[in-house]
Length: 220
Length: 220
DNA sequence: AATAATTTTTAGATTTACCTAAAAATAAAA
DNA sequence: TTTTATTTTTAGGTAAATCTAAAAATTATT
Image (cartoon, rainbow over the protein chains, first blue to last red):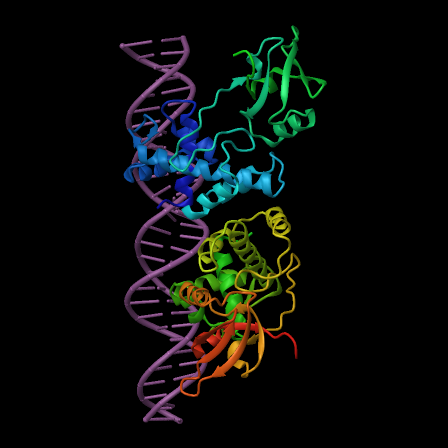
């Protein structure tokens, strides 16, 4: 059994490992809002417990056991987010912090039943996939909106930025999950993207377009 | 803001204060499964924070602030229990431990919305009253089953024992919340009580009868 | 390849919630 | 009212997760 803190480290390492192969002490420290020295201490502990592989000065990687634990936490987090949005009417930009706490509730039975209660959802309110109870993810085929060409269309199925500011911005523009969009123009000047959503034209910056994930429908 | 542990102490003190006026160190230690010396330490801390009144060797009482905090935790605990039973189909004897964890989730918004989602329940799955968001309890008029006379009838509206063994026993006998019962006999030999529930006769020990709470209907 | 910059680790402290063992206060019994 | 028993507190220590400051290793730059 891991402590609350150990679980957070594993989750952080898991997420960092999605971007870089071997995860560095400083990166963990930044993410965990703590100091590198503290990270080194915890890293040793997790390595002793067989949850990560660790070579001094070389960063860490999750072991199979560590990865399973991390995925389980991710699963809980995302299921709770679905609960908060679908059942308690939270907005998609309001759920993260609460889910951050709920993910550490330890009952397996609870999560199984919650999963069932929610209808075995495949994605959380931000489009991130929810692993099943065996830790398997449904295959998803995303493309960043920024990569679409003029005329291309698709459905908004996720975001790769979870800040409240970003999500509120999308909400205001009507760019929520499930919406159909079509790229009508890409501005030469600043690379901003003109898209059509719900019969309206909206203009979004490159930065925003980078973080919207589209599943292309039709020609693919 | 209190720690998880501080919250548990406050809750424990609150529950003990329902029975005895000033709560003793040893009683807290027993309830918290810890040592009296540890309790003394924590008591000092809570007193410093203005959550309890404490005179050395004289036990403790909750301050207004401490009591409010405790009631808030009780509220969360009971609402989560309702959620687990009503929405996730847990049995009434399975919810305590999970609720024990869930009660510490800190979001006020979460609890307000949960309360609403559950339809503002007035009692948890064991019949214990749920304080409203201002900490007020609905007035309840319970009488112990053991105190009923032959011929008296009423509705099972609560239990004063929450052990899984006890609750499972009641379940097996069909003695669940909301059931109408009538006392048909009280055995001279051992004081056990013969009652009628759902057209069946069941016999329960004095010990069991002590812990079933009845709201009398009709003549009252 | 030597030096500079960065990253990571070690060493030694701190805080929280515990503990044990012994002392002090209170309550109960002779 | 002493003596005995019980309860509570103090004193001193431990483990977990953190910290700062300094040392060591690695990486980048000249």
